[in-house]
Length: 124
Image (cartoon, rainbow, N blue to C red):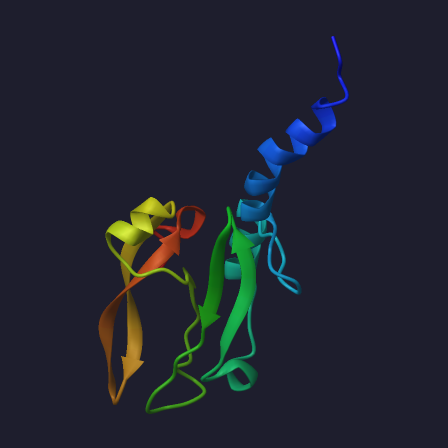
């Protein structure tokens, strides 16, 4: 049996799957543990207020952290970590969970739906 075709076949079969898992240049691959650790870590409300940060990819899906604030800033700055995917069916297809989070708005808060990575689902 001629095995010279085997390396080419392996590359053809696995390259598409590898490209889904590989982050874009400059992005990291995020594990469940890394997401949980980032969510649990303290953050500087003054430095992060109003920012949006691309964290990398978790299971091939882009993850971002938003730091909205309103009214009494930076004291009321919150961190919301979510997939860059619309809530609902697209979220479920990406492996996320659609959940609401309290987002500062004017002198109050409002509930807004986000696509949350499954390891962070239920965290408020």
